[in-house]
Amino acid sequence: YLVACDGYAIDRVLADPTLNEAFQRACCDLEVPGEARDWNRRLLGLRKAGKLASLPTPRRTSLSWDELDRFLFASEIAWEILSTERGVSLDDILCDPNLASEFDQTAYRFAPGWTPFHYRWGALTLRKKAALKKKLAQQHPAGRISKRQLQGPTRGSGEIDGIPESPGLYLLETPATKLYLGETGTLRVTIAVQMKGVENMLHALHVSEPDAHAVRWRPISLPRLDRKQRWGAQSRILAELRPVGNVVQIQALSA
Image (cartoon, rainbow, N blue to C red):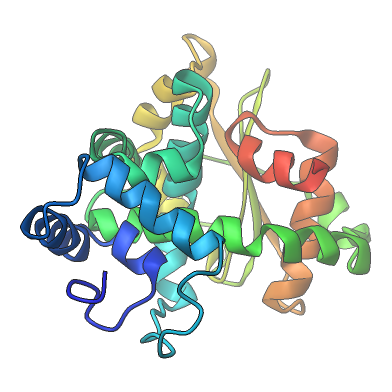
């Protein structure tokens, strides 16, 4: 790990293909028994057991929320799909190169143009924020504004006009199914990205014809709420609506 990490923490080594390949080469050079997924698992186990706590403070990995907004939904939905179809955890995905590659390809279908590191770090970010979001759900009720807007006008694929550029929540839905409730700092930009990959997303979430033709986005503009307040509102609404693409967040709220 010390040979390969370039000063970064273990999560970064697991999520960053370049660093993880360096870690695997180091394990090979040192003739560590096993294969890549075994080495990753053992490294993760050492961290969870606190065996590496004495190491120097690692370099910080930081992605802006402007970046994360563009692909975080893809990370969450890809994680949910593999969790449901393969019965695996996020640790399983990050530690097994084959599962990680499948995760990357799945996320890419919904938000192309980002690297495997971005998609994997997005999933880690969601997991790291899960406990905070659960707490914020109790501190920041959904409120009248967001609930009223859940009954407001919707936009179909390609209908960018009329979607505000403000921060807020958005609901992706069909007449029969609530698909995904997201939070973003820029509604128009994030929904525009989703619109480009919506057919792949519908297929992955097993939304069949003719329902797929009626997919709509419902923007919920919340310009006066900061991100933590939006997370609180999102968590409260998730518990009520239970969209099929938010399973991992819903599970975290129920834990």
